[in-house]
Image (tube, rainbow, N blue to C red; front, top):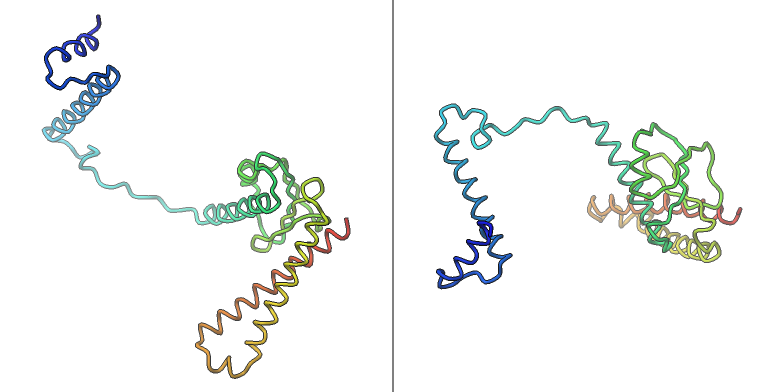
Length: 222
């Protein structure tokens, strides 16, 4: 009989409130043992004269200079992965299903981050192109354009109807915003922040319309 089993059986006889579960008893012993080791370590550390490098009293480490370029690249990668996952969610494509991704570069791009995109977005391959890919879902991150081929992934007719409804809604929304901004009384009387927000809505709507029109044209040309 080892010491742990002896201790368990012995405490059953002597303890008025014994721990009846053997596994719980052993866990409790281990906890006491670890806490005792930590207590001894702290006490010894306090008694040692030269404690300059001890973790208890040492200064908080100073961070080195941050590479801002890497942080910017990672922000771009995060946005690309988020767009890919949103695409799969909207089109009800399982995350485990691999897809292809085409990239049209309009500005500098760190290709060293491509393996991260492939891993987290479950991309079969990333290809670089100088032209837009017909029959694909597209999105932008900064100035660069990304294309995910739709064939085999979604119902093209249903997708076309959905995009057209979204385009009609966005055009109606833009018309409403333009109505406010073209109203001289509104522009002069509204707070500056309100006018700024309406101008941002206008710019966002114009950009979305451009993207939707390209997506519709791309599907129609398949």
